[in-house]
Image (cartoon, rainbow, N blue to C red; front, top):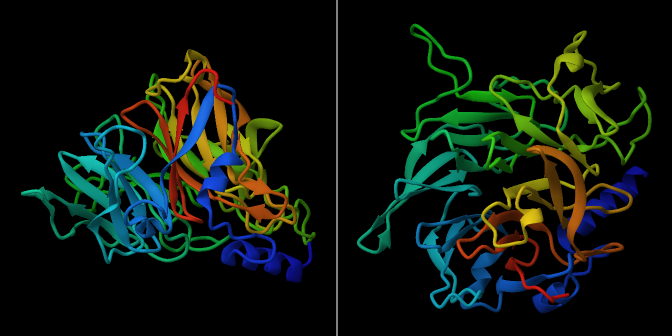
Length: 403
């Protein structure tokens, strides 16, 4: 793919023109989606919802103890709440919780407070007398820019986990916090993999070599942490060769304390997940890639896996409950666009074994009608999907007989 065509593809996908036709009727997006038999996709909220214009750029989601859905708008700098008081599967309205934030994405409820991951740090919001407080700094001074957006989640071990993306496509970072997953206590103190003794400050680094791991979740039985990761762009399988759109594959990694996952020098080999392949155009020290942690499963290159959730808390059929759903946000620089769908990662004996399509239809040739970002299971047992192209939240339920 030549440089001018690759640039035009990027501009079209970014601006909704030429290769991508903007669709102003979100209802059409629902009717075009294909799901497994027995599942039904409906709009939970869109631009047609009361104050639905606030959903522009909807990103990551979380549910509070009362089952209310919260979502960030990174583009709008907002945190929003979408109540469904009568539990009919449709949001009543979109309520502003916080505004003027710095590219917010991840959300986590901890001891009744809402933690929000901005690009430069985490802030805390509390509800006081029915009103949300002004955001207060909680974990400051995280690296900003580059792969800007961050996620935050409370793990089953009682610690907070935050991703920090790389500052570049392929480079050796000067800031050790880049291309990592960090761990903190619920008091906001660093709690990384290596315990620091003496007068040195405790590190927050939990795992390294992760170019951009925005989505993560924990296996409901083993407690293992799984994170999606986006591979580098414009790579080749030969030194000085032309760009190969099929390299590198995107990863799903099992995150372990202190491990290095290969970026910027290595990527997984889909046909042999026992080791990583060295980038011939960005070589590492001897045996570096041999010792890097390989992925547990791979996705099609440049499909941008982001949100992930396990399905154990759904009210879906038993065969789905051991598995996970991953949102593929979609490519920007492939000659043939790919992604723009939900995939099911199948598990057997608590190990990831395969990937198959679950929800498709948002990509039709070069036309894109939606870009799924995050997935979360609601207290009603349905799967909620955020989408940042049109600004919508979908709800996927199991209804035997539905097509």
